[in-house]
Image (cartoon, rainbow, N blue to C red; front, side):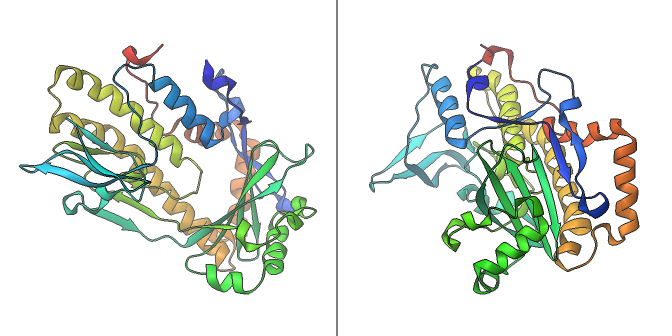
Length: 349
């Protein structure tokens, strides 16, 4: 299909520096999963969104409004009946709908509705994002690095590495004040095989801050409204699967809602069914992220060994290297999530 022709880098392994002398150990062997989907495709966001928009335009009732922001909800008798919007040139208007789906991320105005009750979890870190050149002799896939009070993840994008450096929550200003050279030294100590190219970072302007959040709505719906993706559950960048969960939410919503929407009978029971289906996966993923925060991220950023004891880390490493089948468990989770979602039959072309 068209998705296979998108520019992409296929990730088949997740590697972390858990071996002797920080050698890389494969903790998720995605390539060992059953073909044909035994990889994660890293696709430029713009290309993916353009593909989705082009496919949606084949539907006669589809309309896409670019540079348009939903600013508030239309309400009638306690029911959401649409949105008010504002365009980039200042024009305003209203859109009415039988069902409004909030899938506009963690900044969605839906999250401020008190009846949805946002639950926040503590996050020990923020993230810096930047790019570095990639050489063909470099490792492939998704690779982690551990330094002195420093954690990194680099994602293989083909011609470049998309790099994340995890820093203690709220330390952005202080660390920038210490200077770019100090940051480069910390980074290359964590990922020594990239030590020949951090000079590509010319200024702090190339290093973007992500304010990491981890939270979840207790209710994803109210009459006339459904929240999915980051609007329902903002994910930590740990494991790098937030986009996967958002897509899975959308696929599940399509499967549960296509019939009621066609028949004009969609109601609270139908949107509740979507949350019942997707809440366990979101909650499990966030629970695993919180464990990773507590056992790996927080100790390393505080200058302590991950897992609390170097011997424990070695036991985990030995288990992963002597039991290759065990690599398939996190690999399946990275690739498919806790459960696989299938689109409604009518949507498959």
